[in-house]
Amino acid sequence: MESRYDFIVIGSGIAGLFFAQKVANLVPGAKVAVITKKGETESNTNYAQGGIATVMSGVDSFDSHIEDTLKSGAGLCKRKIVEEIVKNGPKVIQKLVDIGVRFTKEKGEFDLGREGGHSSKRVVHAGDLTGREIERALLNACRKNKNVDIFRNTIALDLITYNHNGHWRCGGAYTFSRHKRIFRSFYAPVTMLATGGVGQVYYNTTNPDIATGDGIAMAYRAGARIANLEFIQFHPTALYDPDGKAFLISEAVRGEGAILINLAGEQFMKKYHPQKELAARDIVARAIDSELKESGDNCVYLDISHKKASFVKKRFTNIYKECLKRGFDITKEPIPVVPSAHYNCGGIVSDLYGQTDIEGMYVCGESAFTGMHGANRLASNSLLEAVVMSDYSTNVAAEFFRKNSFPETPKADKWLHSSIVRRKDKIVISHDKFELRKLMSDFMGIVRTSSRLEMAHNHVKLIAKEIDSFYLSHPSSYDIIELRNIALVANLIIRCALRRKESRGLHYIIDYPNTDDKKGRHNTIIKPPNYKHLGRKNAR
Ligand code: FAD
Ligand code: SIN
Image (cartoon, rainbow, N blue to C red):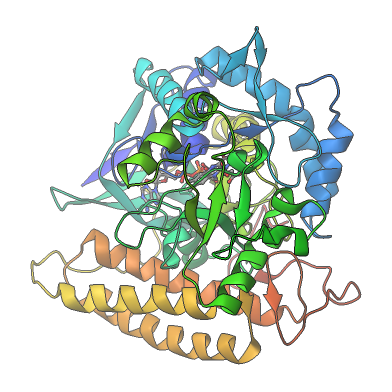
């Protein structure tokens, strides 16, 4: 089955939906397809709690937000990118408001939250369900435009690439539909990858099931460079609930005065950093990890019960209700928490306009590597980057669309896909998935060692090979498609980590405990095997 569109957007989080609604307005009559692998709202965006970091108050400044971002990034942020994104913050907040996002206000002004590493209150939010509100408004805007078609339960498997006058172009994507089990080629001159994060590569994660790194894996297979995957951010405070789904306890809770205590009742952050609970995320996560390793306990506790119950219930309505459902009344007792894989600071190498190594293929949001976050993302800078990039890249992609003709059906690169014959062998998939994710959590977590990295690398290479051959000889299913991507991304994370012989930001390795500014102040760039052979136009 084949379809032709002018723009294909893979992913329906903040990055994909912002792009889709804007490009459909910018290029009158253009047909836009949004391809998304589950329901329209299922994305990391939908679970974002804290909000969007933006300079909004008179006592704050762009310089201060820029400095906080650079400090958190531990010497690896690209200053120009940081400046551009931070200075665009208020403008994109206004654009979101114009689209219909209802952020929380107090006396007519945005109510600003505080989070770790920020020297001012600057997080614009919609209660503690910021992402859900953004998804609602952006989806509404897309649904209102008759030129935007949304394909739910449709997973992109690989990108369609073809040779255009000696250089490599992207001409769309191959997809597989979950319920009808149909393969389909979507052709388009512009493909936007907005597939989000990689949290599911780890066993403990705050990310929903969709976060399997598909965009990064597809881009790598298509010949694009990947960068800085060693910098996986662990959120310090996910609810510790061994029997339930992961649930985040927002950093904004610490911003409102919650303290971290160990089982002995000690407020341990005092020992680790003068900013205590509001130190940067890597520091708090490492401190918790160290407390747990020392004590052998399963979790530490986050306590906001000293605040007025009415305040807690109003400011953190969703967190209060969800914790209550799971047996914890946060207005009366501390919450058990553990660090969990949360965010990927690296991704597909691109500029601020989403341009990648492959012409016609753009990337936005968490899948992209622009240099904004360096070695450690500052809290609530992710939604900000996603929406600024999405805004910028729409203009560039629209220009590319206007200037370039597109073949009826591009003569596509060879594509390998699995068969559609039904045969049940799920146990292999679930076994490999468990093993891979557990291995990544145990060996590639907050504190690393060279020998554990080597062991993880050897294991992952073997499992990845097994999964690849399984992929080619067994029926297609979401599980095997995602597992193949998880295995590839796990391998890329380890390869990045092996290259960094120092500790910096989120990459802490016992064998090299210091930051080496002479040798380590560079990004880790991984070129795919087919990189050399492809002529490129956009390479940066
Ligand atoms: P996503 O929102 O993850 O969207 C990706 C989309 O791609 C999804 O629709 C998914 O289904 C789809 N997709 C993926 N692969 C495929 C495929 N192969 N085929 C088809 N579709 C596919 N950041 C902040 O700045 N502030 C916060 O307060 C904040 N809170 C967070 C709380 C939680 C619990 C989590 C998990 C993250 C939080 N983050 C926060 C990070 C932030 O939410 C994400 O980085 C951001 O939402 C990413 O947006 P995105 O559009 O790039 O990706
Ligand atoms: C949170 O609310 O703690 C998440 C913020 C973020 O990931 O930026």
